[in-house]
Structures are given as C-alpha cells and as structure tokens.
Length: 396
View (cartoon, rainbow, N blue to C red):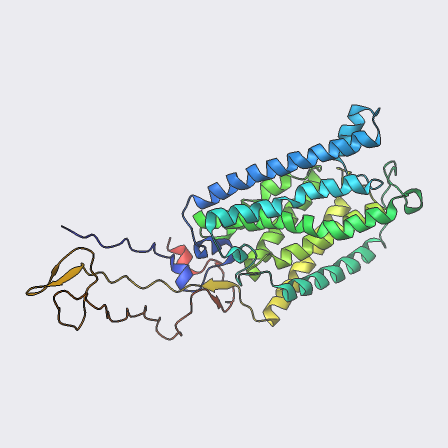
C-alpha cells in the first residue's frame, strides 16, 4: 500500500511575506482566496441585494399608494426614484435601498472568503475609528473653507423650480434627521462596494494598484445620472477615493470624504439651496469639486506621513508539513501497518500502542536583517517610489 502525503498549503504571493499586502491585495489574507472567490462573492451579493431592494420597493409602493390612493401612477413612480425633501419616509427608504449593499457584501464575503471580514475595511483587520474621525475633521475643515471661498464668486443663475425652503417644508426637521442619520451609512455602503469589493477583486487578479484604482471608476460613474461635467466630477472623486484607500491601507479616508460630501449636498437641498435631483452641473462646480478633493487628499497625505504610516499586512508562510508513513509496533520492530502514528525514540512493544513523540516542526526562517513576523503582522508603511508597486511588482 502506498501512502500519499497531504497536499501542501497554497503558496502565498511574494508581496504577502515581503513588504506586505496592500489593501487591494487583502483577499490573499482571507481563509479562502482562490481566483474564483471574487466572482462568487459578487454573484451572491447581487442576489441578496436584489431580494432586499425588491422588498424595500414593495414597502415604498405601499407607502406611496397609502398616502395618495387616487394618485397618478407616473407621479408615484417619480416619488419612488427621486429624493423628495418634503417626504422623509420616502427619503429614508431610498437611502435604505443603497445602504443594504453593505450587509449584502459583508454576508457574501463571510460565506465565500471565510473569517477575517475586518480585512474588508483596512489592513489592520478593522475599521480604524481614530483615523477615520481625523480624516472626517479634515474633510469638514476643507469643505468649510472651499465653500466659503466659492460664495465669494458670482452666484450662478437657477430656476429654483425644485427648491424647497425650510419654512415651506413642514417635514424639515424629519428630513434633516434622516440626512444626518442615514447618509453616513449610505456613503459608507458605496465605499465598501466600489472601493472595497471592487478594488480587492481586481487586486486578486492584477497586482499593480493602478488597475484596482482605475477599473472600478466607470461603474461608479454610471451609477450617477449627471451630465458629462457632473460625471467628470464623479470620476475625479472615484480616482481620489481609490488612491486614498490604497495609500492609507483602508477605507477610512474615502468614507470620510464621501460622508462629508453627501451630507453637504443633501443639507444644501434640505435648506433649499440646491436641487438633490438635478442632473446638470456647471464648470464652476467641477472646478470647486476638484479643488476640494485635491486639498483634502493633500491634507490626508500629510496626516498619514505624520502618523505611524502603516499601510500593508505582512503574513508568515505556513511551515512545510512533515510526513511519515504510518507504522505498526509488532515482531521485529516497526513495520508498515494500518493508521498507527509513527514512533520516535521508543522501542516497539508488542500489544502496546506506540507513543507519538514527534519532534516539533521548525518554523520558517526569517528573512535576513528583519525580525520574524507574526501571522497577519500590521507591517510598517513604506515611502512611495516612482513605481508604486515596487520592484517585486515589475518582475511579474
């Protein structure tokens, strides 16, 4: 009878045990990391999302018909697909239909990739709250300064047809509460999908970070129904958010920017200063958006350099398994038997089971000049080079 040794563990990529995995490569640190896992996660997440959004759509239709049983069907459909600042219930349901992307992705990733779902958030295996609050403070400061400077410029003409002043909105307080409570989750959900799932999916197949940053941009742009100027602004936002996610090793900086941006946009609509459903934008709005995003990215870079600068996750490769065929303690010493463990340093005794005292398996040697990293060590950050992927990337 021949005995085949157990299969060796799947080898880790070079960056996992060397400089460490950047955010877009964190799938390799999960329990299941096959090439197929991003595809199955996406299909499973989309199915869950369709089920939940269908249920939310049914609830929205019931609420709309209950409020106006004899209403025009076209008006009702418009209510189901637009942000109405005078109807906080419908606004909450629309935002909720976006928020459910987050738990759908979380559950799909847990089922497919296994444990360590915190790696969906950052290389630290969790959401770094102190860092996110610091980034949020920076975003608020930047938006306040740029917005104040924007108001010094000549005002743009607006029809004002869809603007609702607070004094003309009986549900103003409810709308404001919905914005403050739900918009942060809506913005975070979009970041987890477009900068979390999509970046890590691309990073599972393509090592260079530029692919993970740029390839999800068209999908994010398509999801926003603006004219070409507005979509250009969305594309700039998506590129900056992707770069910040890769650069800082987590979603916190992108989430902070997205949350502040959306709260400002919805807040302006609640106070009657803009139309949340407008699809046409101006060149001045595009320039202002680019300046805000650029200044915020520079501030985050400065804060990141002044911090601990950790942005990768370094893994320890599993030791090579030691295999020995089973033996049986019988006449004449150990001979191949049936399922008995090997005996080390003990003479066989007939009729007595052998004692397994196998010597410990030596661990993998550490690289010269560096301490042996623990599994999943939160590795120090490294200064960027001309090629952000590093020399190891260029050899592939």
